[in-house]
Image (tube, rainbow, N blue to C red; front, side, top):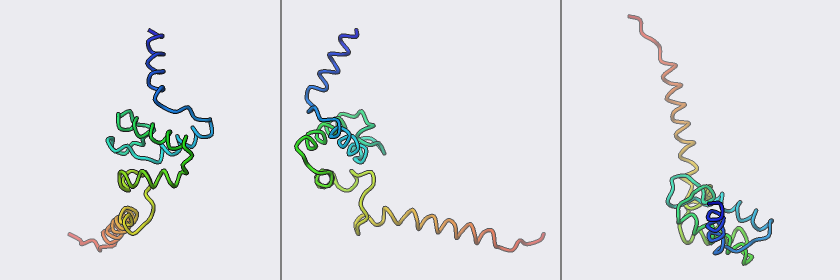
Length: 123
């Protein structure tokens, strides 16, 4: 039973390049920044979906080839769109993603404030 589990683990790792510890740490940090396109709100690092496994393999391959984090981020955005990043960059295209929560919070605060300031009528 243990031998079977060990062989399965080796088979899964066979297709992935072996990285130096500092490169593996960099790859894992990048995997935490990339969103799984199948799972809702999970990073590639946390997801077990087959697509996430492919994305992890791709990230490791690119790190092994010496690509910078910025180049790797850009390649992922070109392939999947800005949604692939857990924290998209602030640009004109992604501004609504950053501004909408602030606007909604201010609107909710203003509504709460006006509701609390209304004079109460006596019955």
